[in-house]
Picture 1 (spheres, rainbow, N blue to C red):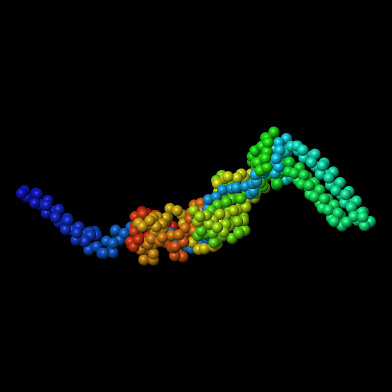
Picture 2: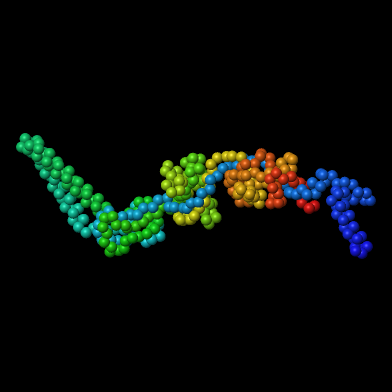
Length: 359
C-alpha cells in the first residue's frame, strides 16, 4: 500500500474519533460539549399562544325546514255541480270569502216547503191551545202540535244549513295553494275543492336529539338561518313528548313571523337553540389536531415546556372559530409545529407575540 493511502485513511479515522468524542472547537481550543447543549440542539421549536377560559352560551344546532303555520284542504260538505269558481291557484283570499259555489238544485224548493210547513204547524199549535183553553182540546193534542212545530223548525234549519254549505268559504286569510274543482264539476260530499295555506306566519320544524331535548324550554328564542343566508328570529312553540321510533329524536316547532310575506314554505334552515351558559375557550380551527386514537384535540405546552395533548368537546361553532371545553383555565397552545411533536415531548416554546420561528 502506498504511503499516501495510509496517511489518508489515518486522517479519516482521526476525524471520526474527534466527532464522536464530544469535543467542540471554540477559537483555538477544544472543550467538551455539555449534555444540555446537546439536548437543546435536537429539541423542536414550536410557536405558542396563551388562551384564557371565557363564558359562552351552549347552543344546539339542528337541521330543519320552513312549513306553513296552517294548511287546510277544504272539502265539499254537500253534493252538487260547481256553478261558480271565484279563485285560481296562488290568489290571496280573505276569511269568509266564497271560493267555489255549488248549484242550489232543488234546495230553494225544499226551503220554501219547509217555511210553509213551519207556518202551518205554528197555526195548528195556536188553534190547539185556544181549544185547550176552552176545555175543548186535550193536553196530549197540544203536546203533539208543539212537537210538530219543533220538527218543522228542525227541517227548516237543516235545509238552511245545507244551502249554506253550497258556498265553500275561506276559513282564514291565506293563499290558494291548489284548486281541485272546475266549473261544471260534479262534487260528492267529501271531495276535495280547494287547499288554503296560511303564510302570515310560518313554523320551522326539526328533530332534536334526545341528549338535548331536556335543555329546551317552550317559549325560548331561536335563531333560524335559511339556506338563502337570511336570518330570522323565532320562538319555540312546541316540543314533542314522544320520540321518533326510528331516530329517537323529538320534533320541535318554532314560530317564525312573516308579516311581509317574504318567506316561503319548504326552505331548508338551521335552527340555533340556546341551552344555557358554560365555560370554554374560543379557538381558531387551525389549532385542532387528531390524536393517534382518533380523538380531536389540541397540543399544549405546560410550565416545564412539555408538550401535552388535550382532547376537546365542542360547545358551539361560529364563523372563524369554535368554542371548546376540556382545557385548563389558562392554556399555552401550540399554534405552529403541532404536527411535528408528540405528547410528552420536551420542546422549545416561542411566543408568537414576541418572535417568529427562525428569527
